Length: 103
Image (tube, rainbow, N blue to C red; front, side, top):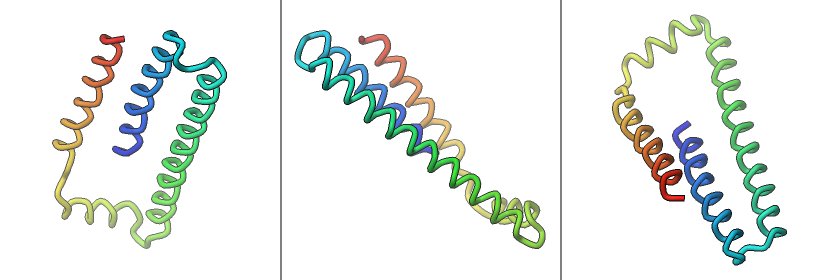
């Protein structure tokens, strides 16, 4: 999921950059449209991968004898990375806001 969020951040940056280059005449309308289509395909593919991963995880959980109870007990033994993720995700949000403010 973290990689998915980073993809969105990077895509937002590249899109802002492409818009500016297009406005400045350094990126043709044709190339800009090609960029938009390629970006859309990349996001769609990444979304499909995330959905497939979640579906696979759910099937694995459901196929276990004790299902979700066993998975949760395994998770309890792992170090919880949420504080780190929360910090990183908030940084991504700040970066989005900076991009919007700068362009």
